[in-house]
Amino acid sequence: MQSQYDVIILGGGLAGLTLSIQLKRMDPAISILVLERRDSGASTAAHKVGESTVELGSHYLREVLGLKAYLEEFELPKHGLRFFFASDNKDDIATRVELGPRERLPTPSHQLDRGTLENFLAKRTQELGTELILGATVKDVNIAEGNHTVTFLKEGEEVKIFCKWAADATGRGSFMKRKLDFHKPMEHHVNAVWWRLKGVIDIDDWSDNAEWKSYLKPGLRYLSTVHFMDKGYWLWVIPLGSKNTSIGIVADPAVHPFDTFNKYEKAIEWLKVNEPRGYKMLEPQKDNLLDFKILKHYAHHTGRIYCAEERWGVTGEAGAFLDPLYSPGTDFIAMNNSWLSDLIVRDLHGENVEARANVYEQSHLSLVDNWIPVYQNKYLLMGNTQIMVMKIFWDWATYWAVPTLLFTNKAFTNLSLLKELFSNSRGLGRRFGELNRVMQDLFIDWAPYETERFSDRYIDPYDLQYMRDFQHDIDTSYEPDALIEKVGQNMKILEQVASDIFRLVSTQVNGTPPNMKVDPYKIKLIAGSTVLAVETELDENISESVKNDVDLMWFYPKPVFA
Ligand SMILES: Cc1cc2nc3c(=O)[nH]c(=O)nc-3n(C[C@H](O)[C@H](O)[C@H](O)COP(=O)(O)OP(=O)(O)OC[C@H]3O[C@@H](n4cnc5c(N)ncnc54)[C@H](O)[C@@H]3O)c2cc1C
Image (cartoon, rainbow, N blue to C red; front, side, top):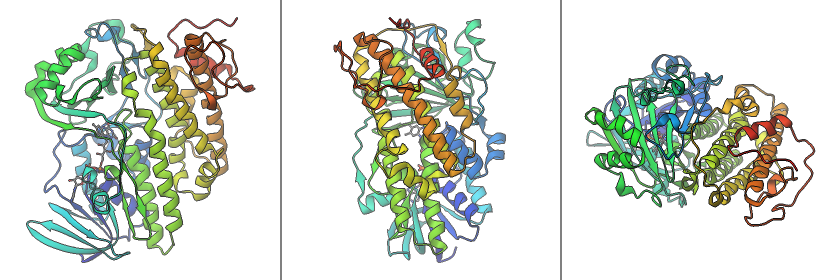
């Protein structure tokens, strides 16, 4: 151990270890020390949550960190997110509406055994020259504009060490947030419990219905992140490469009070009431229990992320965390680490990064703020199948079409692109945030009028042309100008999707003409109104293909054009 490092990373979990690898890949000469409280290797399976990855986070692990070979050899390939919706017959999984991909997806993602992964990341970063000390609990960081003193405890001894940059990756410990008091309220209150079971659980075995089994090739359902959903909750089943299984319940306390499932025995009883098929399949395995964890009010925000003047930053759950629906935790780590490592490397190479750090911090915080409406109050809609189908497709489409494409094209660290996207009020980034907000409100306003229970349907996001196009495009490289043009084209498609969804909903609720003209940014469902509930503008670029795609998501009879 040296007495001085360029960077000290507090906490060697997913965020801290990946940050160290990213920094070393950008500049192998940077000296890095990672201090991790845990005093031995991570246990297999029963380690942490954060097991399911989606496209942005997978791209980060595979391409940015160069972990493709490891992921393909030691972790499972993932077959997308899969949803089973509310049903009057939850005993029979085969009759529930199911949403998920049938065929193998073009853009890869993975199911991660977090223990196996963190042990590998620790080894990898040390091979790259990072020093990692286990059993080291950080007690204090004295910020001194580029010559910070980090104090930690190792085997009862207090050790002091110096660094230019301090990166807080202490997870929910949120070391810097507590020390510098930049906590910010987050109005999204949901609770979670999870447990790992020894052995493989394959959802395909939950029914004998041969037709249902035949919807997908054998083994593919098993590789999905499976969500069973109904009002106020979702239950996850995730396969792990160590041949174990992760199970979790995530629920809004307004519908499912935490004390109804916050102990293992209670969680099993909760399954009996809410997910009877799951109960029948999981209860007999109770002796295979590896762990049981709980987390109340997991969502939290942050007021600060990057401070270039004082040379510190936070990453991972030490900053903000929103919600595990759609598995975005690793995505946020990817964006966060990419911003932070860019600042650190530029600064160590002598560049003044203060203005850049402000732009990154504002971009990061507004990204979190724009993402909040995706989850806030949405657990109350989880029993409405038609709304959730529209919402899940909408959320995926927006995620692939804009932030994922920007990330894979390194736009988040390109200042002129960020300026073009976010600096003026009609810039694409601002419009994207606005459009998403309007749609998230529509889903809520629609809920009182959407009460039908559906069954016996399978819906595949890749039956929709625009969804396929967005997914296929994720790994396409664009020059900056072409990227802006592409995001602009994607926004046009999203605007039309929004308008087409609204036309269907408004026709159903208010009997408005199915071909009415809609300004997507002014969408507002005012129930009971027999006049058009929106100011309208002529939409010249109606694409029949997008309209047909939106019709595919609509379970009710199609409104007839009068
Ligand atoms: C219910 C739930 C489900 C989730 N599911 C998913 C999912 O499917 N996919 C996904 O991508 N994300 C998921 N997430 C998010 C994911 O868990 C986090 O994004 C990720 O684990 C955060 O990693 P981290 O490194 O920031 O924190 P951690 O993994 O918690 O690492 C922090 C590290 O810091 C160490 N530490 C803490 N304090 C100190 C100290 N004082 N000194 C030294 N070391 C210290 C700890 O020992 C720990 O190893 C989920 C989150 C929740 C709550």
